[in-house]
Image 1 (spheres, rainbow, N blue to C red):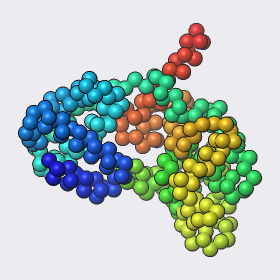
Image 2: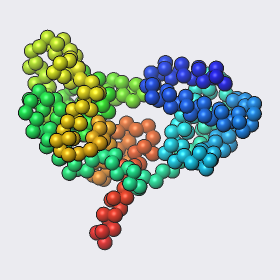
Image 3: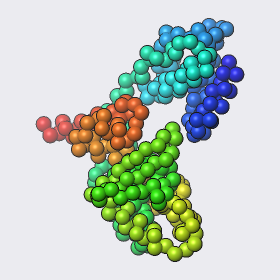
Image 4: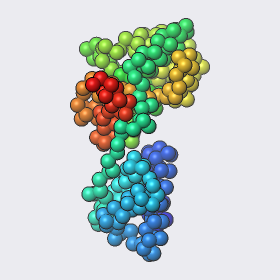
Length: 301
């Protein structure tokens, strides 16, 4: 069994999966194989059937007390694992083909902090606008706009190069060369929200230091020819403290991008495409009302 796992891990590295994903997939596969061996003794992986997977997810739910969202992560990992085995000819049939992900209730309070309300978004941005340092103010507002109005992930923002931004009839097109799963993508920042990026691009071209002139990156720091993910988090933390707001992370702006689309009545399939989600289930949390929203609706009766 270890040979299969080692081959799978090598495959994940070749596919340029990040370390966190690889570690998660490895843990899941090892947990599944251990469960099978403890339950049936000698386990022949080539004979894995859909009923085996269903019994395993039942075990996760009832014995391990895993939540549906966690079980979905196990299923996702096993789907990749068995697809790999099928591609290598190790198994003849993929037992995951008809396995569906668990239904998740996203109405609970645990999801309330994923996104910022419109008022919170405006409050946070107002403190960024008060930044006295022009370099930081223009750059930081442009970074936030790309996450909040185009849904960029933080690693996508730091990877942007100047040539990845193209003006198109007042809008801006941003080329994402290595998105999640190393996927190439093109996203738009419409004219309505492009003012700060436009100002930063003009300012960026005016920077005279050789460090900046030699750098191809769109976003730079005062001491470096690029800005890091940690640098963006530190920047957000600074303004969050000024605004007396907690748990402000780059991904909350991406969550807010999706929630803003949902609140505007955007069909879920369009949100999925704009957010570049692989599964519609990932998008569902933004469309389904939170507990707080349900309570507000009850108050209006």
